[in-house]
Image (cartoon, rainbow, N blue to C red; front, top):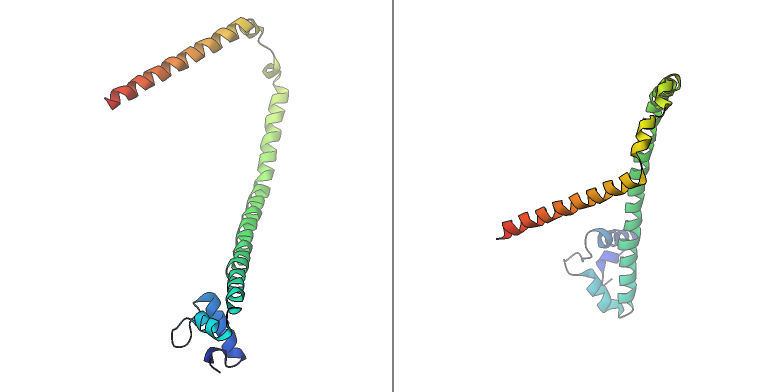
Length: 150
């Protein structure tokens, strides 16, 4: 009877609810956990820490995970519904494009004049010129930064 917060079952349950959500204070405003530590001794402290960590980290974290999972799965369902609604129009467009490609034979004809340009030597020269231009651009960029720092 030294702790009126635990006088009966309903008062005890309400006190535990307040401890887990709002703050663990007695009716007079003093810390309830410290009063219970003085009343029940050193064994109360590890039990109190374990229960508070279990509830605050474990259960509340699980509740948040459920909310996040529900939000994610609803977004996936919404995206699947959107894709299923547009799939018919995409299918029709693809069929039309394939039919156009199949009837237009000139698309598949090879331009043999381009094969003369694609030699190994031309590719190496192109790559070397591109590297030289990139290096020159980097040098000019460094010079501009140096000028700004002066």
